[in-house]
Image (cartoon, rainbow, N blue to C red; front, top):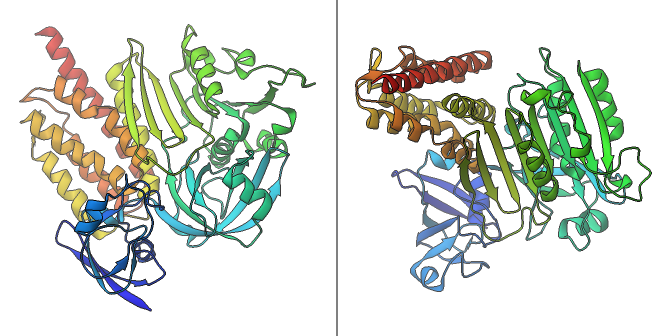
Length: 520
């Protein structure tokens, strides 16, 4: 038996979904492609808390921190747990526009399950509606086995253009996913996959690239390599150092060999830290890093995914260099990645005279980006552009006619504070411009990338340096609309061109403002 659920949004829009009695309200909404607030799926985080105006229901199971007894008595529910007995009217704490945001929950079927070594399993998944999943090389999914009350976070090891997606899993004694993959899983099992998640991903390959992988941290690195191998214009050297604890932890070596022929300038080697190993390179990756070959005397972009001790050791090593890398991106997973409990995504920024580091923390996962501040404004705006180039890929198949109407409204609102080559009201412009630039991040549903953008504090920097009636590059207003036109036409070359020009013009605007103050 099914019941009709009326989802009443904050902007006055009501949408209706059909929900079976053995189905949660959240699942019914997602099946109807309505992305109501949602995260943990097991009544632990409270993200999906909503108010039921009418109807009877099974409230499901949850913890007190997610929904108190008083709230439940008043009529509040967790949509990820609630199943209807009757038709219901549910107030959703977001707008109808934002309800189309959020990470998608997809169904996939295991097509391959391979034990690569005593420590590593590889599995492949055929995702239903594969065309609806756009991800960036380096990102991850939250994956839940059938009929489970837990999920774990795993990075794609496949490239974004591949039909079948793959993942690498380090087996952990007593781990729920490890036990499932070794004892229960079989080809044909259906999985729930939510994502894509995370802000660790390949940026434009404009500088030499050093990839560092530790254990199954190889997964996002191979995804990056797959993407690079499709770039016909790639003209920078790519190097990989792959570290592991034991010899048997080294996997996918045959696949890595193929990149020697698939990339114009690629090389790699492996390192094993086990002192009992007979491996030719024993120790840690930092012992074998050459400042010229791998770091290009500070000009390389460095990408690292590995366990926390490896990430901290590399970070320390790079900071101690006379010329640290221009850009350093890292991600570290704990063994509890994706476990239930606090689901909040938190961001922080720390700066020194020489660098700025943005850190994004989610349960079991920490992502960071460190930028050298030779020119602080340029570094911040370049970081924003890199995030925007990434988020465009995520939203390309999400945006609809209503979105473009809203995006243009935001552009007009920002442009209302620009007259010719002057900004008339800095406070008004900064707020409106920030809303404009945040729009794609909010639509992507990737909270980590939104937090990464927000933590760059672009708005704060602009508000500090710009002055009323001060200079504003004359092309900026038009570029706000040019970007929207290019996105609507799905002309990604034009999108890239507009974002690059817009970034240059924003930096030039800031340079003028700083210079004017210096000469005042």
